[in-house]
Every structure is written in structure tokens, then in C-alpha cells.
Length: 356
Image 1: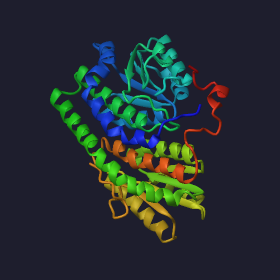
Image 2: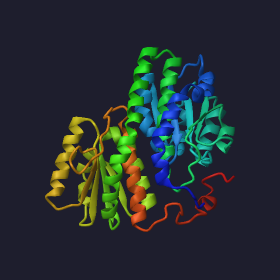
Image 3: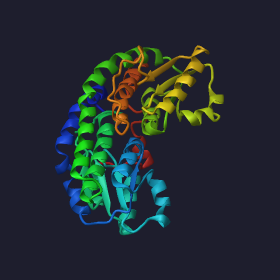
């Protein structure tokens, strides 16, 4: 499939989209809240592939915190392998922005056959996935006609978090006051996004001009930004088409440093927690002495102009904006049209997405 949209424009529209989702959260969640009213929810499975899986990883910690239940972000195949451990009443959310992922659809079908409540999370109305769920949550970001998910990824994370917040209120896990506090913090992050985009554009443009000839890139971050690490590896690989790997800093230090070559560049995604930041700064200093090309988001120095709110529960929403601009601009610098896959007919050949 060949796309026609502009990914950079979609990234720029993200703040307004999240603001609208926040304003309309009650309506967006009404169908799912009605289905879950009065139910006991002992645990939640979030099933998705690619960026949808990464969105699940991003939202899961907040859902755990708000609801006080176990939340498992899983690829659809891994979810199906857990069948013997499914608990009666376990809630299953199948996530697919375009609503065509066959593996997610199968996961929802299996869940319903076993009597588990199933909800689809999708960005498009009347798409295939909505026929395979008991209720639907629509990620109100509009059609994303581009070869890489940008606004849809961030909007999916945001929508899943708001679902967790709404369900926590519905089940009496959070008071109205506690919920309003969270909403205020989320609104503050969204309000600051225009400033992040403005500052991040210069960083992304400068860095893309250097990465245009990169042969090997390693992304480094911490546990709280694992989702951004996963999404960054996927999108830089997908759009810029050269070898990219990503590791939490502690895992990198336990062996992967041996795989660094003379061609390896580094991109650090600095989280909010102090201990991890210190580890990453020490690692960066080590490779600086070797003359490595290194880049950082949220390092808070002269080379990183991005000014984030720094709310640990929602920092991944801010981190994604400069990272998304970076992979789009780098693909352009490398002469790649990310709207044209290497094989536009790939999903038809593989049977991995339901054709319209």
C-alpha cells in the first residue's frame, strides 16, 4: 500500500488532537464504560502488534497504578499462549489503529469464545476489528494516511490512559478529586507540546543531517521509557532503513556493549528518574572519550533544547514528539519516501492485514 499524507504534518497536529480527546473523553469512553458497568475486572490484557503493542506498553504502568490490578501488554500470539492462565472476567483490549490486524482480530475472537469481555481500540470507524468486539473505543485522531504511525501512536497511548482513568472512577478505585488531579497533569503535558515541537524541530533537523549517513544506531533509555525505546527502534528501522537496536541502559551494560563497532552511533532517551539518568550520563561520557557520535533527548543541556514538563507518569507522550520528527526528517535526508514501503504488496502476500 502506498500512502499520500505528510507524517510531519500529522506530528504537528498531535497537541490539538490530544486536547480534543481530553475534552471528549466521556463520550469516547461511553460505550466501553456502559459495557463494564457493575463488572469485576481482575486483570487486563492489552493485545497489539507493532506500534499498537508499544502503545500498550506505554499505557500499562498507568493503568496498573490507577486500577490496582495486573495489566499485561502482549503481542497477540503471546496473549493466545496465555489461554490456560486466563482468569474469568479478564478484560481484553485489542488494539489496531487501522483496525485490520488479523492477529489482533483473532485474539479478540478467542477471548470472546472463552467468555472474556473484549473491547477493540481503533482509529477508524466501521473497520473490520469493530465486528469482533463487545464494545469499541475509537482513537479520535483522524485518518493517518502515511507510512509510519505518528499522531495515531501518541493518541492511542493517551486514549488508553484515559480509559484506565475512566474505569478506575467507574469501579470506585479513584475518587473524583484524584481523577481530576490526573486530568490536570495530563492537560499540562498537552499544553506544553507546542513548545516541545518548536524546540524539537531544530534538534531533529540538525541530528537528521548527521544521521543521513549512519550505518548503525543504538538507542539507550530506562525502564520507564521502554515503550519509547521500542517505538523508536521500530520507526527508525522502518523509515530510515538501516540497522537500529535499542536497550535499557542496565541491559546494555550487561553484555551488549561488546557489539559496538566503529560505525555505531548512539541516541539517548533520558527518563526522569535520577539513578537511570546518572547511569546514562556515565555511559555517554565513556563513549564521548572514544569520539563516538552521540545524540540525546531530554538531557537538559545546550545541545538539547526540548523543555518537557517532566511528569514521570506521562513523560513518554512528550518524548515521542522530537523522536518522531527525527525519524521523519532522517528518512528524508537519506532520500527515502517513507510513504512507499519496500514492498507495497507485502501485507497481501503475508495475509497479515484484512484488505478492505
